[in-house]
Length: 82
Image (cartoon, rainbow, N blue to C red):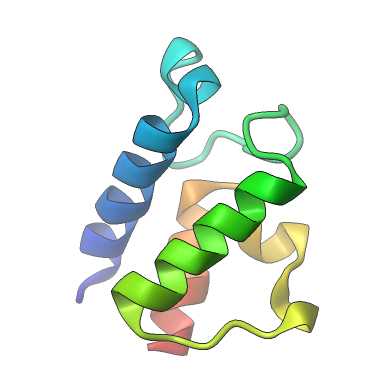
């Protein structure tokens, strides 16, 4: 799967799962954690989806803002895992 496809998949999930993301017109570079779009429970939902949909394992020490603060960063993280 290409990075653009990963980004679109993650963005669609974020917009569907988190109503505040829809209200704020979140895009690929919008800071999800810093702006309160996703909280710690939201990160767990996101991790669950990523593991299931992309068949990757995500370790606890990988759950960092560097990897999860925007759709673009999430997509780059997933791309690196693939």
